[in-house]
Structure formats: structure tokens, C-alpha cells
Length: 447
Image 1 (cartoon, rainbow, N blue to C red):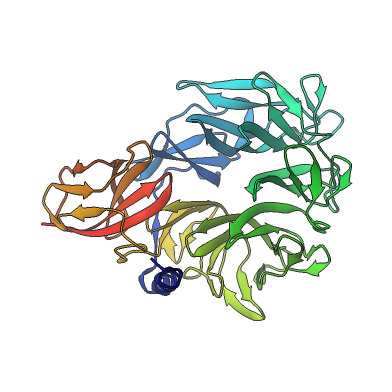
Image 2: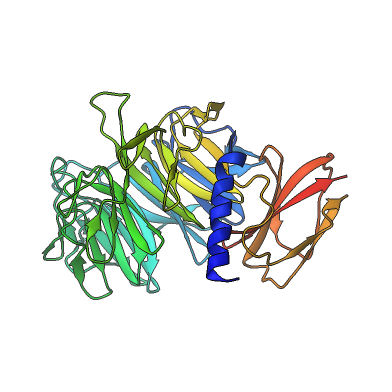
């Protein structure tokens, strides 16, 4: 397919967002006091993790239940990460010590020594993990691991946690007592870290720094306040947080890095309905043709034009879409699902629909393909089974079947023939996913 044809296909796809878009509840079962921090995919199941409860919820039959044991000595789970099929967990600390844990199939086991933050009133919470150049890195609010001085970021050498070239230090105003490295992100073969810190190694970086495997360097002159999240879209790095200035450029919680300078991306967020509450951007999710942005805000701006939208919105490179008004509280968790996105936070309504902390937004209902089809799925009018024609590796490809409302009916490993049980007559959508990325959506009709 030519570049022009691909571009036209994306534009047509984006035009269809609003026409076919709809919010749906993604199930119940999350505890009343819990805030959903994020999602993870593990052994073909979707997990949700929360604060302040250190429970990990599993989506079973469309609802959420606790299938895994709670994380030891934790005040909430901040990140789950799957590396080489192993599930790792980073938690908010409930005391003066904390650890990285991995799940052995029946219990959580500690990986390496205990993280600590001596001399600081803040407990040693761990915030993120990422594999970079075949090495596991973690970041968080700590200054020691065991008896070793390791500050803000550490790497695993296969036996123990090690320092990363003098680490990260000091908090920015107004949170000067909190050194808060929040997210790790790989961009253009370098490891970026964003949060609330002044120094990376011996360099003044102001909330964001990059590591090339050997040394630290700054990303412009950083921010004037804390940063929370990063994402990549159309070849650019985007950063979000509470900041209002990025290397001297006036912004509102979002900035775009073009490789040389921080720029105003042309869109921003504000809190206008609650005086005294400051907006923030927490998370990004990039999908083909769109960047989803989540956080705490109730208005989205494109230039000087204001749109009412809370918690989450979409940017397609030209325009913003507030997703039917968004949700009624903050959002931190974003996840791509076939035909849409899943969001998590502390809300109770999504687009006016009752949704208990987790909701799905479908923008591809009724769209039968994305770009060129990789597979032939037949018959369109089926009885008990469908066939999939095309070459694929079963370790990478999965399918999901949803009904016309978006409810998940069946999922599993993609096979040449898939048999369904006890489906009523009606319209369904079969999605093919490779390594978590949507490949193809097919509309099917059960006789």
C-alpha cells in the first residue's frame, strides 16, 4: 500500500471514531476504596492493579476478581511489568523497607535486596520497571538497596541491584522533600526517566533525563514542576505532568520534544470546574493514528478553543476528541483493546454510562478492517466456528470475540479453526491481536 493510501486510510479511520464510538462498563468487582492505577496482560488474562489496596484483580468472565495473592507489605501496587513471561510488581511502601517482587506461579518472591530511604520521612516506594538493552531497570523513591548507596534508579545485574552512574537526586519545588522518579521509557534507543528530581548523575536535569547505557544527559532544561508520564507519537516524545514551563516554553501540563527543543504541542488541559485544583497529565497511550492522554482535568484545549472533557482524550495530530465527554474523575490507567481502549481510575461514570472504575471506549465498532487485511476470516455468516487463513505464529497472535455491545465473549490463541460454544444469534466482532496490538477486526453474524 502506498504512503498516500495508508495516510488516507488512517484519516478515514479517524473520521469514523466519533460516528461509531461508545463507552461500555468493563465489569464490576473492584473494591469501593480502590483507584485503578494500571493494567497488564499476563498469561492471556488482563490484570488491574490498584491503590491503596495491594490487590491484583483479574478479569474473569467480564468482571474483576482477586485471583493472585496480595503483594506483601504494600500500600498499593504502582506497576506490574511482564518481562520474558515473568510477572514483576512494584509497590507503594507501607514501611521503611520495600522490594521488587516476581510471581512464581503461586506466591510473590523478592528479587534482590530491600530498598530503603533512610533519613527521609517518605517511605521507599517503587514506581516503574523497564527492560533496556537486556537489563532490568527500576525507579522510585529510595537512596539505598541493602547496604549500597543507590539513589532513585537501579539496574539488575542478575544477582543484585546496582547503581546507575550516581543515580537521581533532590526534589523540585514545591515537593522538595520528595525525590520521585515516576516512569521509565525507551525512545530512540535511549532510556528516559521522568519524575520529580533535580539531578541525574552530576547534571542538572529538572524532572527528565536520558541514559545511553554509559552516561546521563539532560533533555533540554527540563521542567519547572513534576513530570509523570511519557509517550511517543508520530516520531516525537511527549511528556506530561503538572509543569507549566518546559525549557522556558510556556505549556499547560503537556510538552513535545522534537529532538532539540521542548515545544508547545498545540493542545493542553485545564481544571475549570473545581477552583484551586491543578490539572495534571499522567499517562499516554499511542495507537495507530492517535495518541490518548489521561490524567486529572475537566477541559481540553486545542489552541485557544476549549472543549469540555474529563480524565481522558484523544489527539490525532490535527484535532482533539474528548471521547463523548470522558469520565467523571481522574484517569491513570490506559490500555489498548481490540477496537478501542480500556481506561481505569476512580470514576463512576464514562460518557454518562455507569462504569465502576474501569470502562472500555470503542471507536472501531462497525469498522471491518484496519489498513490491508493480513488474514481471511470466513464464513462471515457462521454457525459454530470460523476459519482463519494466513500464516501466523501462535505464540504471538490471539483472538477476541465481542458482541455488539462490546462485551467480551471469548478469547484465546489464534488458530486456523476456532470453535465457539452456545452463542446466541446476533452480530459479533472478531479481533486479531499480535503482541497486544490490534491487527484486524472482522464483523461476523451468528445464524
